[in-house]
Amino acid sequence: MSAPPDPAARVRFAPSPTGFLHVGSARTALFNWIYARSVGGKMLLRIEDTDEARNRPELVDLIYDLLSWLRIDWDEEPVFQSQRRERHRTAVESLLGSGAAYLCDADNQPVAGTTLRPGLAARFRMPAGRTVTFADVVRGEVSFASDDLEDFVVWRSAGAATFLLANAVDDVDMGVTHAIRGEDLLSGVPKVVLLLEALGVEAPTYAHLPLLVNASRKKLSKRRDDVSLGDYRARGYLPEAMANHLALLGWGPADDTEIRPMAEIIEQFRLTDVNRAPAFFDTKKLEHFNGVYIRSLSTTEYLRRSGPWLGEAAPWPAERMRPDVLEALAPVVQEKVRTLGDIGRYVDWLFLAEPPIDDESWRKAMSAPAAPAVLDDAISTYAEADWTPEAAHAAALALAERHGLKLGKAQAPIRVALTGRTVGPPLFESMVLLDRHEVLRRLRVARHRLAAQRT
Ligand code: GLU
Image (cartoon, rainbow, N blue to C red; front, top):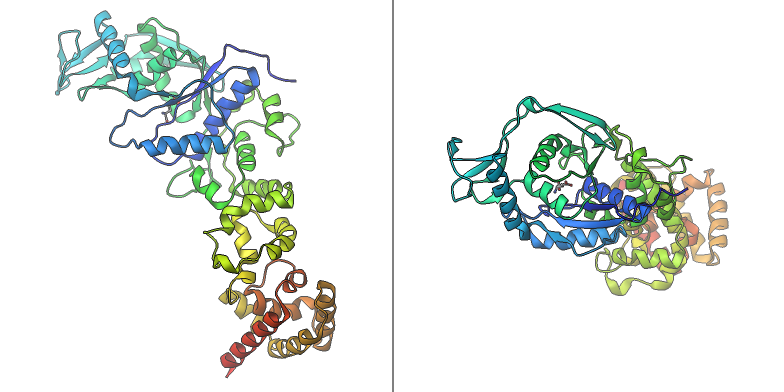
């Protein structure tokens, strides 16, 4: 059953373009969007770009780009807070005019007058003895005593409104009905409620989404955790998997089926069901979701989406990449990868002039007493065997038996000689994608290297 329609609902995502887009901000954007789409309301965008020192216009484009990547769209033109300075000034002067705010000088001493001028700041006059209450959709009823709050700055002497004032006035002017945002902003609401009351306008309904925490239940931090949405995209996370995972941070479907299309999430979402417990941004779970979403793609689509990791970013020279080999291997690679970026590790050995030898894998596989004999045998066996996966497999089984080894043990030195690693795609399917001559050459190179090491 869908949420009751509310076409008058207007929500907004209000990022400050001062750095990369944090996954917590992406979650906020997504919850706003899901809410708007679930009730048939409007999703607005406001760029809070008033911090001139830290603002970078290219970061605004990055925000648009990453929202679009997550399939989040918005209604109406984005509002730029920096273009609303005059409106903020008027709001502060109206507070000064009614006595709800007062001017003060550089030493914080009150100054008479109701007009802003250089060098003067303005503070909101906190009313005494008031108890103010508001209902947060997530947090429930929140009450506070005005006596616990100080006279806060609404206008800086440098000539600009503070965050609280600009943010509150813009919400009202944009007709925002629900301010859905991160819990870190909750503590400012009491001041905003009084500020808007003094301006004679109504505050939106607030919904503060729970904090995101890492595996040790600590608030996600730039230093400790991977928090940049753009970085996840660059590593090959699918937007569908990321959005699905973000949607579960503070909300869950009644039937507990977590991996599901966004249309179903929109169908089931209720803002009132968002819970206040800190939400675990579980990178393992995200990786699992990503694997599931990757495997749900057709192989053609999987390869198409892997394009960026196979192009210039790939470790092999472009002219050595063989699309036929890639296509043949794609279905088995798709079964194994966790991110689109993983593809390189599975196929690079086919396109590099020499296998990328991983030292740890080499040590593990080649320290076995039988390794030299296995390689010698493989060189003669694969000079003769039919060049099909089945024949390569049968030849390896016979070889293993001759050396009294299980297939896995016998296969390890061969795999490392050919691919450079102990783990990778199914060996027999993929080794025949190289020509026989190259397979024999790699086996001999490895055999020589091993002999050199042992003497
Ligand atoms: N610009 C604020 C931020 O990025 C968000 C303000 C809000 O959503 O009310 O933290």
